[in-house]
Image 1 (cartoon, helix red, strand yellow):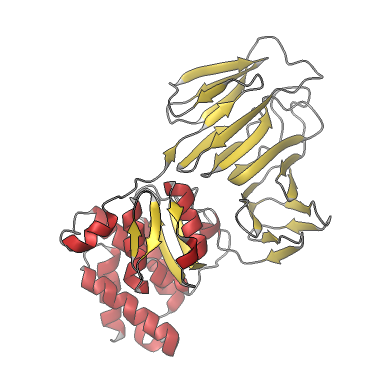
Image 2 (image 1 turned 180 degrees about the vertical axis):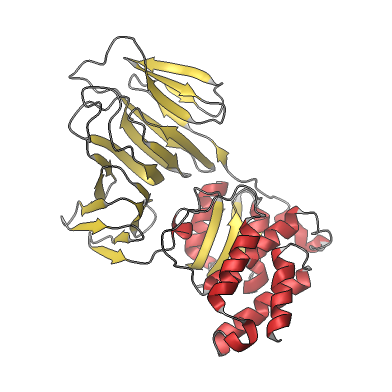
Length: 391
């Protein structure tokens, strides 16, 4: 295949007109090049330019995709082939997938599972609970001089009222719990915005009143921290915002960052997009300062390793309603699918495979598995909300 042929094929894939055979040909040819001879600029053109063009063309056609405007380049070699998965998704969504699966193949996915959605339970200080996905819009509850409201887009917001103030010696703590197969967004009383991923929870005060703003996280969340406190005795002041997990503390002022602290992941990852943060290990006391584009990786032993040049699109893909696989181990992918689709996985029979790809999280589980099958030779089956491998 020569440069012009490859670019023509890439163009068809990017605009969604490629056939399934052409998509398979591209993936096969690209993977063969990577394994045997690396990237051939003479035949395929400049790698970075092609990646950038495909990224712009394909993501422009992907519903629900919001790209983080990165201040520096860090596109990776895998991105070119990874983006093909987006185009395959567009291809499927445009109705060109008729006949792609034979009847006997489709039976493997007859127990298909829908993607996750906005689901959460809010537990108030008095123990009462609000099922947020079933609650209507408007004011849901009041606590002291703070009211809890649900907006039309489903977001939960804490705002001030003129009611009785919260006693100085009493913090009213709330906990928002996101089940498997769910996600949710809320705005804290200080103006901080929080996005919570599936199987996560956040404990926080209804009103920040002390010398620090402390929240407790289990699972994964993306934070856009307000620089100054709104409401309470600390109103208008720059008060440190602290995120506690089971293994670390993160201290910030105004900044954007993502924390992945699931109990079933061996490494706790804190990725900084904007501002600066200080990460401290609870076990060892080790401290790491982060700059934008850096990621701290806290191990089970309590050591902190610094990773630089991190791909922000990958780090916050879940928030942008995407799966982003960048040489990602199959076991890690399966844990992500398990949380988002609320399914069990047959972990004992998972081979040591790695995948590249970008797909919408708003598709059925079978579509994700089919895309993985196309480039791996693996075969999956969904049965009774469980993903298993076929021998």
